[in-house]
Image 1 (tube, rainbow, N blue to C red):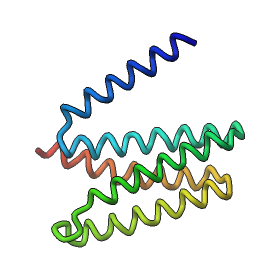
Image 2: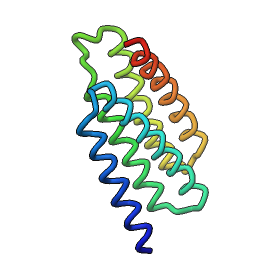
Image 3: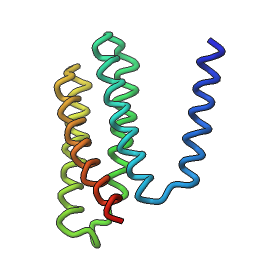
Length: 128
């Protein structure tokens, strides 16, 4: 049990170090990566019938999607930002529904959408 505690502490320190050095672009990537990780974990919890953990992980994913949405600049971002805003609202609605219905297919749908957005975002960083 001590090893697990030490591993979590290491991961926390490592994540905090990455946050300090991260560019705004990288922070968005990290949010997306965290969302995808939480979705995979939530699906596993759902499959194990761990209702409490599933709810917690879906809640964390909703928070991450909310953070991505808050990061949008709707005035400067034009149509792209408006479309992302609508997509983030849709994803949040679907996550609530996945939690309520205990439906892993919806989690897969949201993960696919988030992967697609992340792919585009990752492409931007490769151009710079």
